[in-house]
Image (cartoon, rainbow, N blue to C red; front, side, top):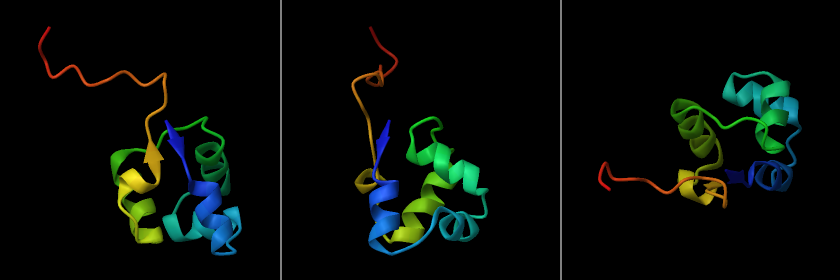
Length: 74
């Protein structure tokens, strides 16, 4: 999954620590999100979207490694 977290954070002039405080996570978690080493839980994704006042899909997008939904059928 790709995200625009770093871009959005920098546009607002926030440090990783400042964003982490707003999200109630560690700075290391913000760093892992920004570098793609960690995908957020759904509740955290909603907190991130709320922090930037954007829909989740404007922040997170699937990349070529993400499997398409199966819909439960073959």
